[in-house]
Length: 115
Length: 114
Image: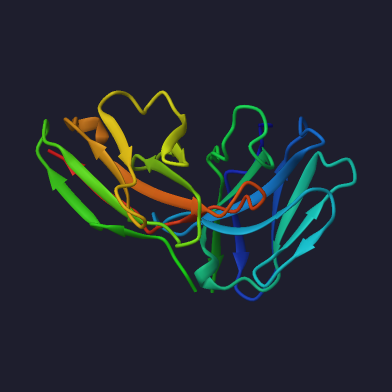
């Protein structure tokens, strides 16, 4: 799975959009970008994933650059409850190669939402 | 909404003792995982389980660890002889099938080995 690079921490004001970047310059054509978050030692929570098109769901939007070397997770109206560690993970879909779906977590970005 | 559950939420044990951590994955899911997170560190993959056998394991998952799906609902992680360094949060996760990649995590079991 391709390596990802994320800022260590970010701040955001409550009610404003939080834009969390992720670099994955070595991504392969069959690798998806996944975002999970972890709120204070709880189990990681799935947010969104995409291959090359932008995606949106009830939690967030995912913008993937045309060359797929980077992406941005957007929380449109951040709340205090969005304070968490956000993980960007790149992996092959399906049981490709020797991976049976394991997720490889990095250090992620600590997002702090301020009142 | 269906969710992964784990018991106990906290477990304290003495070094050398055996512990069993229990998980109930989402009912129609086919792939099961254990991860752990030592305090202040990254979430680490331990093992994946499919069709009643281990499909992949990490270097952490040595002979002291074992997993089992004893019935149609539970998925367990056993540590035979706990060490101080096994103290961590242990997360169970599950997903439906090969095409659906999203893993759903349980709330975790905090294990403290004294």
